[in-house]
Length: 511
Image (tube, rainbow, N blue to C red; front, side, top):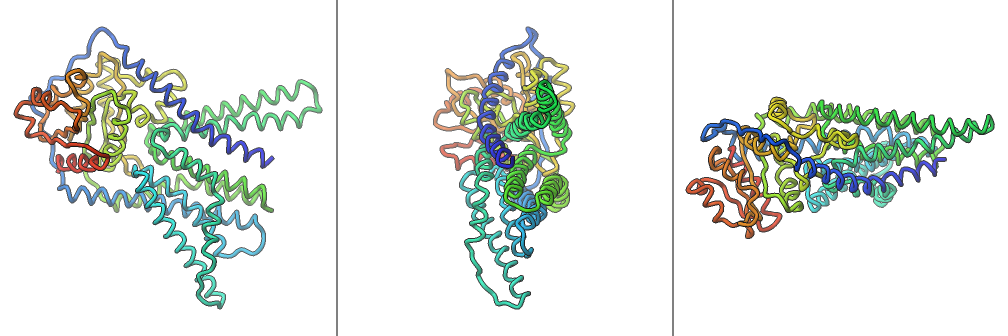
């Protein structure tokens, strides 16, 4: 039975990636279809002053320090959370293995399980693959050194002498988590992070229904021929209903800001670790019920402990009024738009909310549990701004409160063909800084001309950052902005490293 459950876990991990990619493809198609629909009446543009002035914040150096402190709080919160929740899990593994319990044995397992914080930190801070690898190397050095320290403290306490022990034991133990590492690696790409948590939870639970139904059907097969079929259908319907209810609860909890998108992903990664370790220990251990209890404690404690850690560390990181970033771009190049969002939007979320118009090019970056559930039930149209009343309602609920982990949200607006211009104009009035990607802007591709002319007429040019490259026809910018173009901040991007300059320039705007 344990082997079959373990096989089901592996299948669920693999299917999560495949189903997530399919979901994103269909989600993009649905978003594009919704954008093309619209009423005949175009929503009127807001009456705005000729120029919108905005508040000035701390200096660039102070903002960079604030960013680093908040990054440090996220790192420490996930590190301490996983370590604290890994202790009962490690105790259960050591106990199920039999023999005498040693502090060094429990600490070895706990520190290995603490590796789960690596993808959580990388996802929350939007680290590049290179930076993530560097962070993983530093984490490995920290955890292995901690294990060596615990080992020597135990040896000295028992009357022995300091020793290096066997350094390969730590890495050999970590290698046993290959399946968990595969799942982390497969769901770490930003393209699937928005849908992977709910997809994995759904596959894990829905897939468990026929497994449990088949076992119960076999148990009652001696009663009558009809009983197994009825039992199978009953279990499948019951588990399916409970899973669907749980998905609704997750979506509502996310919309009520009980957790962030990164925290939901972190809990999914931790669940994968706990289930994997539990199946292995129950299969080969001697005390399965003790191991199941340890897994339950490790899983149930993760959310409250993580919230408590963030609540304590966020205050230490410092507070400042949020600054809103409006991200605009020339539509058409999905990879380019995603890179801009990844490099700029993810970092800005430590300082304030990010607003943007949803389109297929960034759908994978903006989808959240509520959107996912609405798409599953065929109610994604409810997310679209379809009228002036819808727009006012969305703007009234403008989200400027950070999530429990201190990161602000991306307020992405899905618009119809008759509402997008009014929505963009309203968002400009509420933005402390506007970053517009004009790469690809040419005479034949002037789809963003409305945004440019609106910015030129109603937005302070010194608070505008234009991202350009060799494909940008600068003459169009000169025609639209005139002399005001000299006041705007123009950043040339020729490589991915230049995206850091875009972020620094955006900071200078509010500094």
